Image 1 (tube, rainbow, N blue to C red):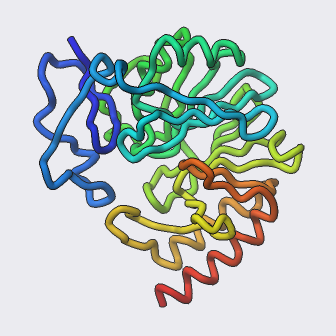
Image 2: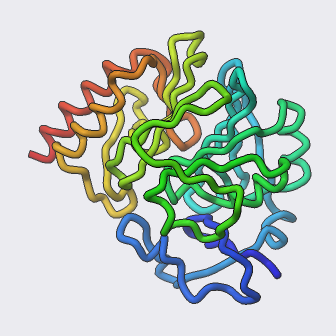
Length: 268
């Protein structure tokens, strides 16, 4: 049986023989259902017309993006960490060409997801690389659309992975919204992979703080303070968000400070 994939959020669902009646991820107010209604695809339907393109961003970090754009058009990031490669966030498309390209960089020894809009076909990706664990914050149990033994839920505000990176729950966009700290990134100054917990804006000088990006619902100043309070003690100088070309290459902490002040002025 096929695993159906929502074409709006990109999440893969457990195989049941027919498409699900709805996508709860899209029906949540942080996402949306298309005006044309709910629609589904499968990996078999996607593969002939799509491919994943890989691009190095810095030594030890590779971006993976699906072409043409699918769902929200995110990127996954492959970190070549000291203890093994970690895939941060996921795409819906996985095919033989992608598997071969990732294996040429050392494969995948763990996966970690920032929030449900970035789950994609994470179980399928894990299976394609020998079933490495997928690390999800425990608050995401209800958001998993394809349960599988490879998924490992973690509690609390920090998880140190054997590969040499750490996960930090910041909250905000979701209760479990997570960022990944890669200490070796940015030439040893540290890189923070934030997805849209701290969404790098197109000017690449600020970050945004939103409860819902497509529906334009901002976070409250107190929630932003809590998110930033968990981030600023970490050692980093660079930030990578979840879309192509959205990164702050240096001075990231000062950019975050400016962004908090700007956000507070706007919402107050």
